[in-house]
Image (cartoon, rainbow, N blue to C red; front, side):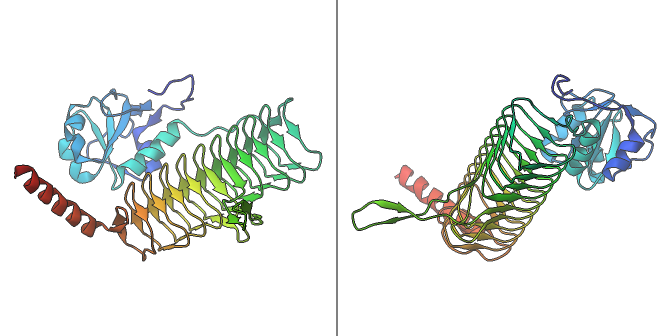
Length: 342
């Protein structure tokens, strides 16, 4: 059970209603009126709670679980105890997310501006928005309806924030336009100058003026402590529906397509372009001025130094197709074993 100090639960709900909620269906013989009060992991769920099972590594756990109900694929019901009501779904994890959202829906805080916040007279604040303690909203900034501006966040002059967007505590936004339904985590910096310098004849580093913006499209999520640099002339663009984990750096002029997933501690160098639905695992690094095609998947801790065509799965440094990478690993392992024996 989630800690009630931090999470407010709704319910209970009929099992049939939860199945409808997640697009699943009840297995034969399941009581549609069974009452479910909460979601829980397989290992701790009780008779009035629901869990999910989507990985055969956990078949022993599901068999031993006391959960009253469990969401699983039809072929996996053979692993469920007879006391468990099975909700059938081809995508149990997604279905569980929908059910959990039913029990723990997002609730918007009461609108208003905290007395310690500073909002410029020329700024526009949309209906139903909340500005928390210590936040600063600059001149000519435009904040949409039902937005949340976290404590000590700074929204710079002329920044645009779309409807239903959440800006986390201590985030700093400048030189940017943020779409609707965007989530920006605590400590994020959007719109800082990109890393552009030239060396003059005396050996000094001369900063190149960074005259672009950051454009964050609708439905993007940016995790805590990320840095998204503004463009040097062209804009830095984050495509609609992209999800960025904590501690990611996106350099100037980068263009990221729609629906990409970028895991923590990754970095994208300047002027690199990503197509749609690209997946970057943790601690991945992309060199500058390269193109990553749509649907590319990049393994963790990889270094990508050149263009990657659409749909390819790559891994390693320098990154190469996954099969080639693992063939090389196997060869090196055999060579190391031979040397050790001799």
